[in-house]
Image 1 (tube, helix red, strand yellow):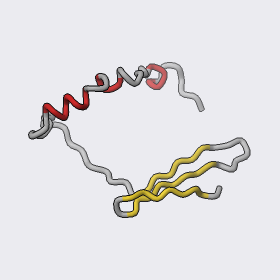
Image 2 (cartoon, rainbow, N blue to C red; image 1 turned 90 degrees about the vertical axis):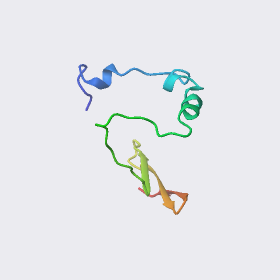
Image 3 (cartoon, rainbow, N blue to C red; image 1 turned 135 degrees about the vertical axis):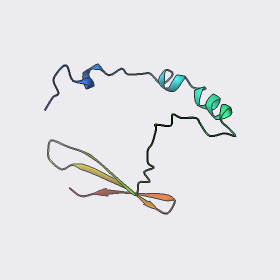
Amino acid sequence: MTPPMDHPIHNEKRFGPQEAGGGPFALDAARAKFKDAPIPRPCSWGGLRLIPERFEFWQGRVSRLHDRVVFERNNTAWRICRLAP
């Protein structure tokens, strides 16, 4: 099902590699600026940290034999395997 033309997905702006995040040196500049201090944020900001243990990606095919790949964490390393449809 395709979203209607007034849906926000049709108004997205795409960035090239140099434009995304302020350029290639923006991350280095931010790391240097906040090297010894926490990055300031508004008091109203909250959040949580997600630590994934498993990801599954799949790509549908016309034959319905989908290509499925699983990434599973094993302590600090990731194990990659392909699943049967």
